[in-house]
Image (cartoon, rainbow, N blue to C red; front, top):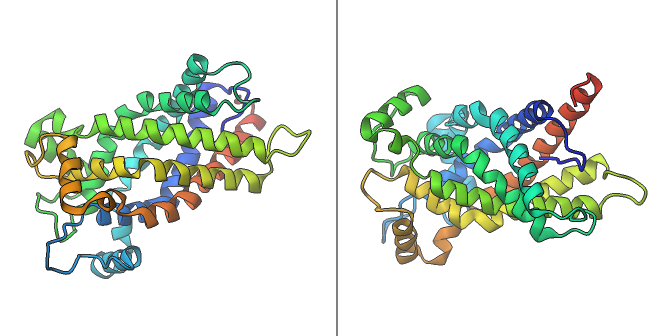
Length: 302
């Protein structure tokens, strides 16, 4: 997401951020599906892994398409798409609140990255009410056709919400929201700090903003930075959200199980598809946001 030094209005942020978020989901969701499948695959000692370790991303994509068609790569997309507009509006609001709390007046001019990062992390408090249950629905839908999924299968989001509610009430629907908030705080810290750093570094002397290509690259690299930092948390989150009810007492139990079974590398499953996805998805988000933002300014919505 792009952030102007001059704060725009909430309606502007909502509309432009929503467009950027839609671009991000459309470009990045297939690779996100692959990431979740690899993260949650169950490896039985002595048996071949569901997806080959040496070419897991390609092998996973191939098997999904062979079994489910290309639509399998877009499983669970309805949930994030339905939430992107309000989520991105809230993200900009949260970032603005965070800047007011943490940032000095010269924080962006002197690149006080810790202050900027903490401002970014604040946005997670605003987005988690949407992202928490959205991630729960998305991960379950993405893994229903996986060979190691043992839970009931649902035909779409509405049936899944109904089934999860019957299974455990609201707490079942929002399972993993706490760790989602923590994950996104870490992600937003690195995302906004990296973006603002690159944005300033690549702004030509005498200009207020970098060019389109530099903005594109800044968004892409910022996306890669936040995912490298928070992937271990995301792996724990995904495992916890798709696990059978009662299998784990909490997220710490998931982390202990991963460490015991797979070691440190188990937390980094799906790293390749994450990084491959992060650059184009976040770059697409920037393109969508900036394009919508310019249009909104032209029609007087500032």
